[in-house]
Amino acid sequence: MRRIILPALAAVTLLPGCATQKQQAKNDAPFVWEGANMYFLLTDRFNNGDTTNDLNYNRTKEAGTLRGFEGGDIKGITQKIKDGYFQDLGINAVWFTPVVEQIHDATDEGTGVSYGFHGYWAKDWTRLDANFGTEKDLAELIETAHANGIRIVLDGVINHTGPVTDADTVWPDGWVRTEPQCQYNNYENTTACTLVKNLPDVRTESNEAVELPRALVNKWKAEGRYEQEVKELDDFFARTGYPRAPKYYIIKWLIDYIRNYGADGYRADTVKHLGEDVWADFSKECDAAFAEWKKNNPGKVLDDNSFFTVGEVYNYGISSGQQFDFGDKKVNYYQNGFDALINFEMKHDANKPYEELFTKYSGILNSSLKGYTVLNYLASHDDGGPFDKKREKTYKAANVLLLTPGISQVYYGDETARPLDIPGAVGDATLRSFMNWDDIKNNEETKALLAHWQKLGQFRRNHPSVGAGTHEMIANTPYSFKRAYTNGSYTDVVVVGLDLAEGKKTIATGNAFADGAKVRDAYSGKTATAEGGKVTFDTPYTLLLLEKVQ
Image (cartoon, rainbow, N blue to C red; front, side, top):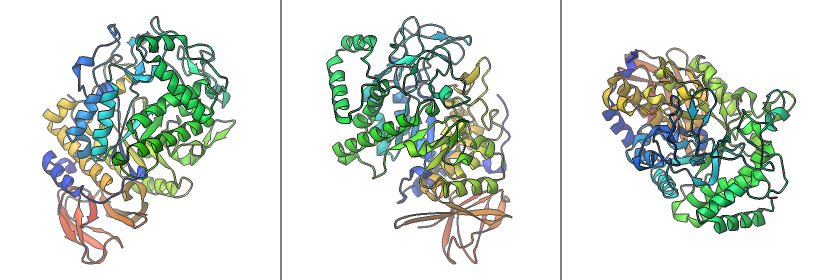
């Protein structure tokens, strides 16, 4: 096992810190998408909650390293909510990879046999994959999440179907194209093309009516639900007036998971490979479905937040503001349905000094991106160049990710140093190992690291100002800054100190706390009194997370 060098602030214990934070979590902070702490996981690789569904559809071929199904499922996610795992991390939104029915067979593109364990190879958008669970499981997951103050973000794919295999036939020509492959050097050859060989691309630019694929009709009839599916489609097209084009069928199938179960958001896959008009229509229908679910389930509505959409526009960075440049055309995806875009720039910006990073993000989010936001990440399921692939800067990663303005995306295992470099795994597979639960139980270094992520995560969850507020440096040495957020009658102000001395330390708090105000350090649990724009604490840690005691 590799040795992780721990900084002084790692000398924390897991359970006492969690108990203290749980008590502090009982506040009146509103949920704000712009400051959310989102956890992203691969459904198949997180937690196996039901071993009876591990093998389905005759998926018995020996897969390449980390390219087959490994048992994670919807029940496994629900179980971890019930266990308090996400709550302890301060997570208030969970995004997981698609759970719709995947192609049954496997492909072999030179990296070993691969199954659709990742969820991005759809066979039937209207049915969940048996390896992931049932519709009942999904309903329970969303209800359990909501009962614990956690929003659920689904993952939606409109761009492509699953690959063609001996057991999974290609969709009709009116639905998909199989060539040319994308060249990515202008708008047309990024949108009207296939991402990779043998990944049929949905003709999302088309408004021509198409019939349901014969294979899908036969499948539905065999499952005894053909008439119901057709009736729902007829109702959808009658209500919306859309032509029966491929993109609108898929949009209908995706929004059913909002209308039927109350999902709170969608992460949209491969956004720049579809025309922006598709996403505008998708967002419109998501909003309508969410409104319908709220109307039909008044006792289950969490708040008046709108449906949330975040897009994966590959290589978009926060510095681009609202524009993405294809070279020959610029597209504003924020103006076409998205509340947020995934920020591919963050993993590079993470190397900047704290103040430079925080000032940059706060400035952009409160100017050119005001009213919108970005989803910051340092590791993900398909980025082969993460910030800390060898897991040597895990504490720094937590500080950067959880204290930077915008939404934080914790990739499963960031908080436990789950390895991202697996011997024998090729390409994306090395990023997708099973969650290292045993390390949490047995490894003291992992426990200490997890406690650090928990304390920072709960501070972020309890204070919308951390992610959604305005940033202001108070002092350079020792370094401290203020975040402030106001929404109607609600105001939230915090002060954070980083790279501080161990033991006794005094930091400037500016005008954040009035003289005589009692201030609590959410990291150590200690309290002190603010005087003269300063506060003094004696803790063994090198950071302070300061909040006014209510």
